[in-house]
Length: 613
Image 1 (cartoon, rainbow, N blue to C red):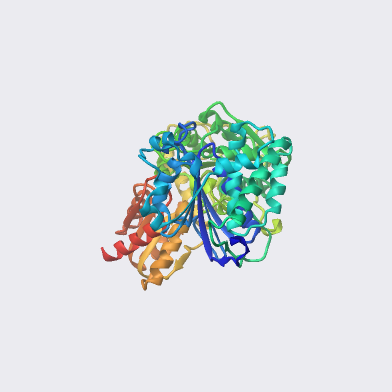
Image 2: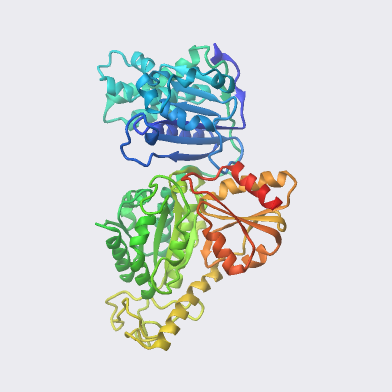
């Protein structure tokens, strides 16, 4: 039998699962990711959801995908081209086959390649029988639905219920193909469906049937194995960006000794922040699902004014609605964090796709001169640390902070080394209680922050609001000189956040031919693209900006050390414009707005093109 042969060792493997949104591809991908993490592999994932909630079954618009990259070495992206494509229907096949590596494996659910389904995606006949396809790839046609029906025969399930188990059958084949231990997966299924034992039994049978199908047929001819990755010792968990961000916010609240209050209106892809924070009531977290975006940020502002860490989570369309209230938080000078999990735009745009097109909105999307600090996480695990840093700056400088993530980071996952709680510094917070000499806008000399006073503190009654206030007393003022002073001091306060920003970290060459600058979730693809360019003999450096407002103090000096600067981002050149304006550097721009992350090859090609320009 094929299964008796020694497995072939692979350093890394990229698997893409694709089917209808109801085919369980996200669950299947998540479970194989869990098995890879438990096996000690480094992992990175990219779930790709359909934008339409209920697209017609079998159509291109309804295709749901999940890509997993697992390896025995360090990885930074979910991978470019997959080694394996699991296609549950013709639409999934058509949408993804162009990305498969030459010689890659196609595992197709032959039962779904009916004339009706082929017609929906303009196939005259099954592409699985195409000679050119079979010369280019290893194509395995399996009647999955029939195999699942045989495995579950006699269980008394309906045809529809049986069909739901085909994703576990496919998962079983993958477990066999990559020599994964099945015991933990069986235990997970038992726990997941503990309240529905019949479904638990059905899914276990389907999973085992898929595993044994691979073991007892001569179809595949070989199996593969990816050894453990060499990682820094410690306790790890596989974590998604939204979950890491929530964990960071709760940790920051505990380190500050101040309760956290979230005001939020559900919006893709930020909704999971509300869902997950709601689980932490025992840590003093309060979550409030508001009737709209404006009410959500208003509640967060009230919480911050009342002495809590106010947080609101949203995406680009919601941030647009919050603009006036964010300006109010700026003029009130209260500490709060606004999380923007970006998605494709404009307007409602591409709700489930990734993009970085909200940078200028976060920088300038308020009436008047109302600058706020802006920080961006670069990976799912990095969301934890970015959240803590955002809270720290908010309470130290008494200002709202915008924390930027994106759909790619929010829904992607990677191993996260769980830090020891004692290694995370406390966040100093003090509430003024001394009434002698109190003035609402009296400021700390180093940070220019005004004092944080809880309403009701004896002798410290005060008024804040959206009208301009006197430079010191906080009384309403229409004096033009005072307004100039207040605008200047609020801007200077944000600029002084530079005091807390470490020197610019350069990866690769410290000077040379070209510096590649990025921010947010593009880190991994840029990093690998830069390393490949360096391997090709070029002197290339990489700077990935964490703080976008203000920039690090030394950024201008770093940009000047290279002959050329290339800015890579998933928008039409927003950071590129900011850098050119701030530092008068003749930077080049490489952009993409397709709702998809950069491919490593795209970045590498852009570097080569910039060097030749």
